[in-house]
Image (tube, rainbow, N blue to C red):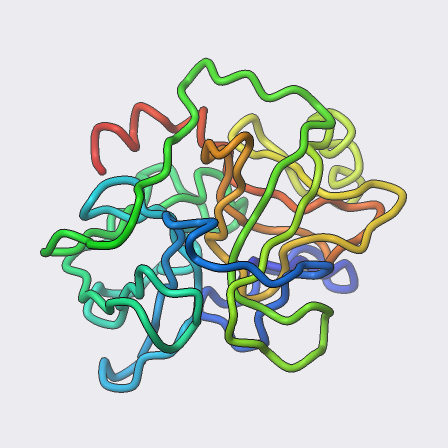
Length: 252
């Protein structure tokens, strides 16, 4: 799930493997042909009964990007990737994974460098790898971005199986950092803030770990953490792809 921080007891990251329903607050239904680089990441504690748990983005014919905190502490045999399907737990093709590479600077306590590369031993078919933001990619404030994944339309609702997507806007980095800084959360240069300030109602949430964030069809973010869901004061925070492009290109 996207790590959700709690004010009452300080900042606490929820465990990496989802235990709550997926939620893309304010989202609407989508189909995989709109987002052919999106992959459902399936998890099983015993490697026998796999269910959709997180989301990834296909960046090569054998590599998927996701949030490091989603797979942190796990081995590859507990995970599968479903590609080419609009549905969380059916359709498309399910692939075993043979390696998990977490960014060496990732810190679970701060969520900085929250990115991992999952690799399949076989080539994915019926997919289209995402274009990733280059190191000098220009992403101003108030830009329209889209995110896709599996989840319910509102927090607390029953989980749905079909792919969903939301539209949001990029939030000024200093504004985002100042708001989270009030209770000690550090928004670093490796992070990207999105949402609808003063309005709320649209966001990624629990179950959306690793969701891609696209700007003009280019992958610019990976859903990471935040306070609550669709909060009008605290935006959602994603890993900023352009800061990590060299590492992705060297390892994917």
